[in-house]
Image (cartoon, rainbow, N blue to C red):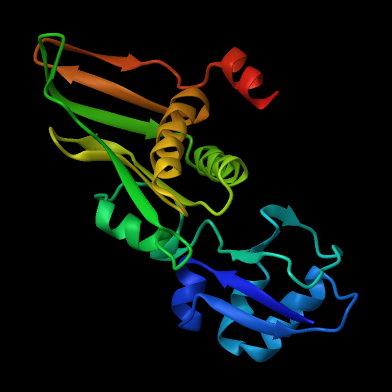
Amino acid sequence: MNLKVKLFAGLAQRAKTRELSVELPKGSTVMDLTQAISHQWPDLADLIGVVNVAVNHQFAGGDQLLHAGDEIALIPPVSGGSDQLFAITDQPLSADRMIEMVVNPYAGAAVAFCGTVREFTRGRRTVHLEYEAYREMAEKMLEQIGQEIAGKWPGTVAAIHHRVGKLEISEISVVIAVATPHRAESFEAGRYAIERIKQMVPIWKKEVWEDGETWVGSQVDRSRVNHLNS
């Protein structure tokens, strides 16, 4: 049987294509597929061991059987280099770079949301903001949000980067990029992502004013997270 396998981000860049065509016998599994890809495309071999495989918009284990007509995608690793889809970083953020990471031939729309540092809040002047995160957990939570988005809006590819450290006025603190088959889902998925970040991701900010400073409390509201995960 012939299987079509979608590639994204760093995988697509390395393979120089967005889709692989793989021939396997009937009764083959996800593991058989990844082994075949490693053999036929050696440039991808070192990444195959760390990718997730999605079959019909659901993450699949190595023993899952494959069938002709399945929609298969290799989900790139969420850490490692500039192609990281979900990241906490102390480096300046780029909406253009994030859009490049998610745009693909199956998308009809792409949207980037940027959160920026504003100078005035309810008449009070902000000098700068300082962001702090529990990085390891925060990146896993961002990845979870990406998986939730893929489940709610099939065919969506998302990337989320949040900055930490000292940010000056008008600098970008967060970028959410989503690419979807249709435009309405792009706006819906982007809004969903920023709300979930506020609810569940361990990121804090210190507002520094001309006459004082304060930490804005933990993003984590347990009751809301439990409710949304139920």
